[in-house]
Image (cartoon, rainbow, N blue to C red; front, side, top):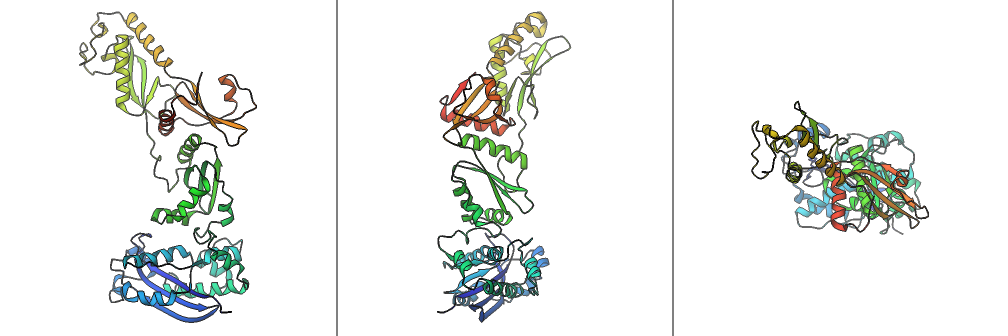
Length: 459
């Protein structure tokens, strides 16, 4: 039986991520089993400038590659050496996708079986502190010359592959990674396949963490396992970098999408993950507030602050706050000037609200005016509703709830169906307190627009 054919490959590039990344140097070593049968090394003209930081890392500059062959000139040699062979590299998805991208520019579809020596090493040499090529070679006493040059890295990877094959003589590990049903080749190098396989196919939140355990991405999904895999199938540069940064994945099942969305918003605010872009901007809301001026008149005003606890009402755009104040003025015959709708120091002359009784020019007593202001404030408070949104739980034996108290999101919780909870106070013992923010407000508003009062229980 003929031994497998491997091509161990390393490329140096212009460093522009997966998309737009061009090759500056390539080395391919072909092995039949553990015997080297062919080798090819070449600088490559990337047809674009090499950034200074890449030159600092690899030593390859524009002058070195100016007269080097362009990729199309060596493409046939690459096809010849890799046809029928298993494509092997340290962090294989990077080298494979860069080469595949180069062939795509030529109109050729490059497809090969892949093996990652990072993932193989994690399986064959478990428990090491790092599986970067440099640290791995140091731990296994493998010589590594000309680090960050294609030939030096390839030669070291060849020795690493031989060391792996010497231990995995029956090719059980190698074949398990080559199995078409295996997700091993799809997964980033540092992620354990068993950990991903154990992810639930349920609704909830998942957290990608780096080597130090820091959260680098928070997401929500109707199917956690499926969504996590979708990140690794995506070939966009951001998703590739996310995969390279991820070492562990945590998750939390919520049972329904509403709680998942709210929990995702909380996790993004708490951890401020590197790879999340949406929801990271903290939006300070507009508030309707009250204060008593030097004349003793209760004035209403629009203020903007992240602190909302003592607000009469909270809005996330100024126009909504103005409309609300204008309605209060019209309904309770308040003065536009003392509701901060006009900056004039004279008698109010609002373009639309004409029913002020004259507090602004002394034609009404402060006491009578303040009574109407208090009536307006009472009405405002009544409209800040307290309610629960009931949703599915994490199991058939429980349900979840989201609590909004006086218009402010308080948190969510889970309750066993067997528990008899009658009063709102009963639910507070089960609540997982959360922060009321712009994003949680938008999530709840969107839910109510979609489902109305179908799952709402008012106090």
